[in-house]
Image (tube, rainbow, N blue to C red):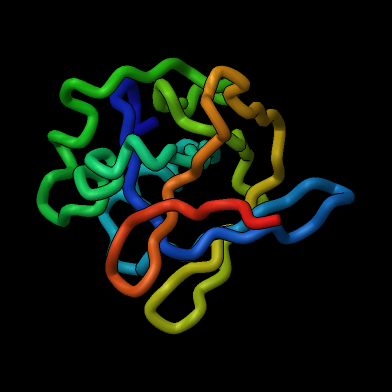
Length: 141
């Protein structure tokens, strides 16, 4: 959140960092206006989109659309107040633990305070990004 307004963006690199304590990380660009807005809140929530939400992935990735990203998007507040997108496969709510500058990106380390997976999904089928395209995967075996 930036004040009373939700803010968000599509991130390309997200990782689990630690199980004890539970920590995750992601890498926004140092010149990202969206990251500047999020960082001031001290919190963030990662939303794992479903394969049916490719439109949201592109909507939140488009530069210059920051003020329009949440238009028509249903969301609710996570325990920290950060936005949880409706129908996300899972969400991970975090406090910002540390931010490290690493070249033209930051590494944002978040301490997990709450998380949940949506049991109503048929699958679940998370949205994946590979070689410039979006898709999902099929389980073999």
